[in-house]
Image (cartoon, rainbow, N blue to C red; front, side):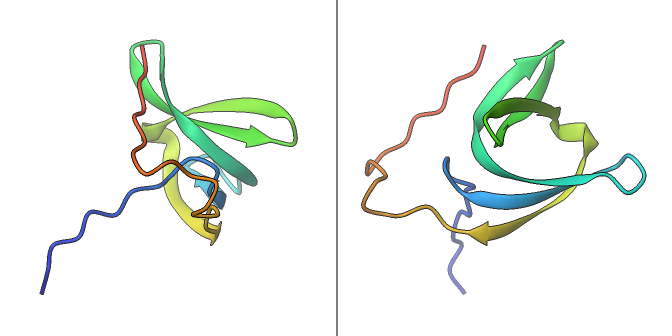
Length: 80
């Protein structure tokens, strides 16, 4: 079996479930950032950016993949 790297690409529509009781949301993944010294994932929730520390995420369901035509061949994601 081949080892294939699975990457969550920007513009992927997904459902994010958080460790807080019954807390989840649907959003579009935008990238990664730094939040108070922790790595955070950035999601677009109806026009508002939501920064979620990765330690608070229980799981992410991909609901729709990004269009491959709109994506560049190489994606570099940076955070500070």
